[in-house]
Length: 560
Image 1 (cartoon, rainbow, N blue to C red):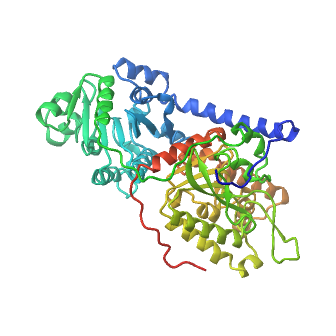
Image 2: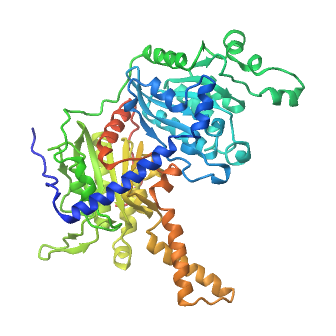
């Protein structure tokens, strides 16, 4: 085996600081699990029982039955809608369950309406979540399966759901685009499917309908009566027999949920060959050090220092690390590695304080960890271009407070070098996967492949914080703006009033930077336990290999 660079060391598991940090992180993970368990209850026990009384499975039961192995389900968007729409009674998981899982041996995206949440009605976040599922399927060429059971658009919020390019109507445009790319779409109508929503299953390649519970129509009986004065029962208007034997709208009629899910498995089992790009994969080896160490290695303080190499050493394959420009641009780590055997490039923020050599005689100037300096941006841009040249996926590990500021940085061309890095990330065509382990602030979020830069997956640890800047700095700026506004109105604040105002602003701002706030708005795809990072990334790398196409890489005009 070719010699690799040494990365990582034994964790000081007996030290008091390690144990304190481990206990702190364990509490964060436990809170995340408790909140996740509550969300998985959907609309609650009574609504679940009502679903069962109608002879129907819940969305989660349907997915568990459908998959080859329910434990292999990787749920995305679980926290969508978290603490949103409270005046409407809430919308757990955005009223939809979605994720990746194996069906008849093939990795699929599965999307299921949760009829226990407002009868599966579509809130704005529901549309956003379904669009994300379709984008993942489109980018990675994985089949997408829709388990439809929805009352349609949530009418009190129709103005936020219906007309725009990232709203409800985009779903059907994506149906057509997926079909044109040859990406399989299979739909099972397992409950209501009303109005515009009727197009989703019917624009799929194959549609199944459940007798007695499934129905699909552009207008339900009440609307038909109001519009044209016709009296008609729901089953006659759009039931299983109507659409399987008279209109020919659906392809298969089945007797219950289980039969519908069995039919989907059979259809997938009769699929054609799976084309792959063929990203290089060698024999997988376990990391050099256990993932359980991660809790104790990550500092409890938001701006605490740590060596990112120690984190990577518990995620990548042992003896696979080759660091690129190790002595230059040291607030960013760049290197080649393998993860579960897959060849990858790694770009990661270094949180330790480092020294940057400016000449041969000095020790160099101190650089603050987590900040992207001009030399680091220059290095990362070149490395990203190399990864595109080699055609290997890139993994980004974010813990970034932003780019360096100040007179020296500006005169040194930080904007030029930052623009170069953003250009490289923007135009990169190899698959990118992002893990937010800590801070993700300002332009640092952009340069490190945040949501706006098309990562195939965005994962976040419970310590993730996403915002335009850190809470302390932002709160002081917002306080100054508010004080000036009050002064213009003739009000003068005492020192105590200013402190109270700062505290109020800081609390509000900090709430908006939590990982739950980000996950609720689908800025990230999943909140994960750090211990599971390797498994998630391995699944992601397998997923991206399903797309046999790779666009040509071209940076256009780039700052040099």
